[in-house]
Length: 129
Image (cartoon, rainbow, N blue to C red; front, side, top):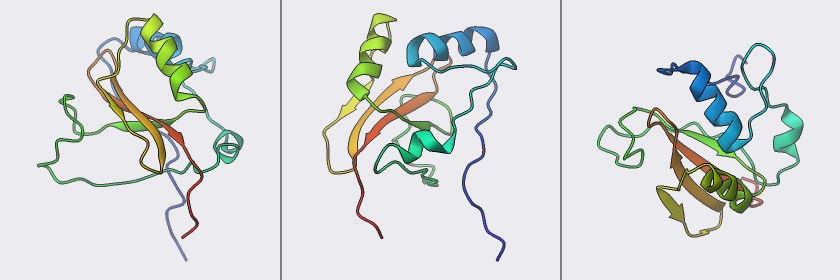
């Protein structure tokens, strides 16, 4: 049966791609390949119990992505939310929202230099469905 297996990449434009790439490296610790992008191998997610890739279409009346003006946001799985937020704070980046742990793990929202919302997620093991 022909079916989608997952997300193979995320590509977007930035006003200043070099500065934006540098921000993601400095603030979030993303390691870049020689060609400029980041590659995450499946082992990283497999080693984080409860991690998954979520694809969700929201109504155009949803305010979940605000204060970003973009029509999308993305979620990055992290192994230590407090540590990532501490590195971001050291770079002058404060969360726009912190969430209480409601079972799926810990979440925080930050904005990148172009105002795109990034959801940071430290997952907890999920029940199998």
